[in-house]
Image (tube, one colour):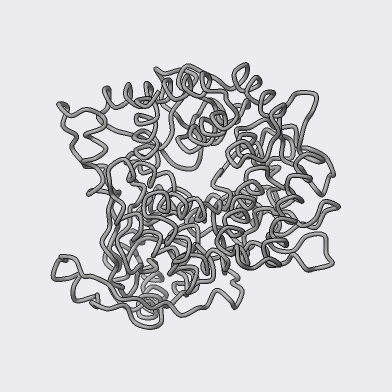
Length: 532
């Protein structure tokens, strides 16, 4: 198997970096300054059959472990040696990997919490554990080096993640870490300038996709503290990110890359440029497609589901129940189009002096509202739903994506009132709000609740005067965070909001601890409740 990459991803990646303390063996493999060109050739191409054999024979329980390994020797040397030695009697593949690669560890899993600390103190103590200094490039690593410090989520997520970072920054604000927020924004600007967009994470195997475009909201968050000069500093990269998402809008085709042309104008979908197994989930994708005799379309739908951040959920399934029916690229999501509305709105502020560009952006914004009202609004039940443009119908799946238009103030008051009523009746649970109303065994469905969706829901409700419901959700989410912390000494990636005595579950990997966005939203909601 080979990953297919379009040419524009092969960009130069240069940056100045700080060096951190390393072991002798690490220092011998690293340089103190990142070279002017970074190799974006991914492990499957570099390692050939070795990559496939390691992933399919499940040498590691988690497929992501191998792609995060660092080669101790040049890849060509390892590949040649493997092709020779694997034919020998008694060959041990696991030992070969251990001899030729440095195996990464999980982040923060061994952090010992102090039972005497409050949950707030625990989160503040975790920031240094989750923080990474600027990167020095390592030969044989898949990491795309970043020039300034950043925060990783934790657990198996050893690199920066795009949309996670906004919710992490909410907590960094409460901790007064404004320089770190600016450093992270500079890193994302660096990625836009060099890769062409903000990838899912700073690994070379992620460059075929992005994640929900929260960069504009990060810029606004810092501007609220540092002033309008923040808009001036980042306006060019904001415009470049917008160009990435809108690349394909001028086509006569119905859909091209992230763009879908509709009677309401161009709107957007999630779309990964690759159509082969995800390297970090190679085994899972490969066997699923083999089982179903699927092809490139299914691979792309799996990858695009990963770009959505909701990997995986009934939102992307044709039957609303099984991942075997995934059709992500056929769906125009409510949340993505609300996020791009927010980016367009910020660009009108950043380029206020350019009347033509502002008018162009406002037309796009009006088109998005018109699309959601015409195609996504379910007037009978009072909710927004995603729209399948291939089947020409709403998906029927109710999810917290419906709150994104409220967050960005795209809805009218009657729509917001109907959504608030529906959330209170259907989504409100003992631990906060549930992600969807369907229990599929996938992690972005019931009974799980996620920190980013609590925040989007609470702010959206606040925007339309539903203060009591917003406060109730905040109180319940904070309570489940503190309950789990008291029992385990940890903050985790997701929570079971329906039964506070059970752990969250589902998905392709175990529940991760750390955890960047849970920490961030917790601190932000503690501050929110203190102000009420």
